[in-house]
Each structure stands twice: as C-alpha cells, then as structure tokens.
Length: 236
Image 1 (cartoon, rainbow, N blue to C red):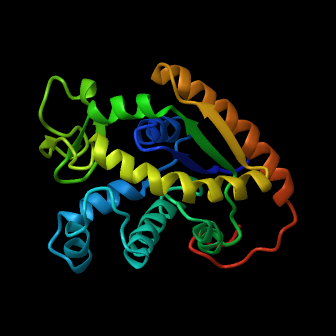
Image 2 (cartoon, rainbow, N blue to C red):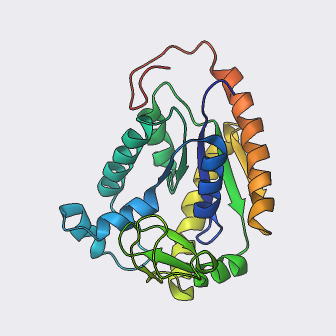
C-alpha cells in the first residue's frame, strides 16, 4: 500500500464495529474516528452540543448539524497524525455518503467493511458491554473484568442506557432502512465487502484485514491520475 487507507466500518448495533475498528487501526497504524464515541463524550460536557445530545432519548440519532460538526473535528484531528483512518459510525444515510466525499476531497474511501452479525448475536453483545462515563468509549465486559475503570482515560465504566432489547429494536428499525441505501451506494462503487462477524475477535479481524487489503489495492489503481484538490485531508 503506497498510502494509508481510509476505511469505513459499518454493521448493526452490537456487531462489533468498535472492537474491530480498533484492531484494524492498530494493524494499519492509523487513527480511529468513532463518531458514536465522540458524541457520547460530548453529551457529558457542559457545552451547547453536549446539552442537545444529553436530551436525546436512548437510541435516537444526533441532529445532523451536531453530528457533522463533531465528525469534522475528528477528521481534522486524525489528519494531524495520518493520511489514513478508520471511520466508525458514519455515514448512516445516503446523503452522508456524498457529504463524506466532499470532506475527503482528493482522498477517497478505499474500502467499506460491513460486519454481518445476526440480531441475536448483536443483542447478546450489547448486554455484555460497558461504556466510559468520561470519554464514551465502549468495550466488552470481559475486557474490563478486573477493573471498573476505563483503560483509555481512567473514567468510571457503566452500562449504556440504550444497550437493551427495546432500544435495540428501535435503532434497528431506522438502521436497516437507511443503511441499506448506504450499502447499495458503496456496492455500486465496488467498495463494499461483507464480512462474517460471528466468531472470535481474531477470526473476524483476519477476515476484515484481507478484505481491506484487496479493496485498497483496487481503489488505488482507480485513483491514479486524479487532479488534487483542497480538502480536510489536504492535497494528495
């Protein structure tokens, strides 16, 4: 790979996006922009956005203008450290695919990984994870069994309010319709790889790594000769 890839990771709530995004980021030595984590962290702050997010019912998406502002901040931070990144939690709507294209400018998404996991598996995983009250990071309970503190920032760990069956059903009802359009768009672009998300973390990680490698190499060849333009990611 001549340049660090930009990878979008999607999947149902509880499919393992957060865990696998972190593993892939470590493998590729690129940062993760986890929009969900950033929104949760912002909701705990005494800011305008924080107050708006704190009032949202469990499972409801953040307002578009809030989500995009938080996303742009994350992309700018990532750009300071790497040309590539793993994007978790965006896009979730068809129009956001085009918006992401604009934010990336001359860079393009190299691969889209959709982690396939059935609803029962997702529900079980949601029941078995905890979230940090300070930074918003989530992790399986088995990774935090020896401590009640977040490995990322030292904050207190707790169950998320929307990690329950009722909230999951509400989130899935919205997710299935909107994400179907997103996945169709990326399929048309030849970027989507569906990966079986059932199995050990190591097994799923290996499947994702293989898909990303193949997708990035193909997209690299398609992008050669494109004219550079200014964006959040500078000039190519």
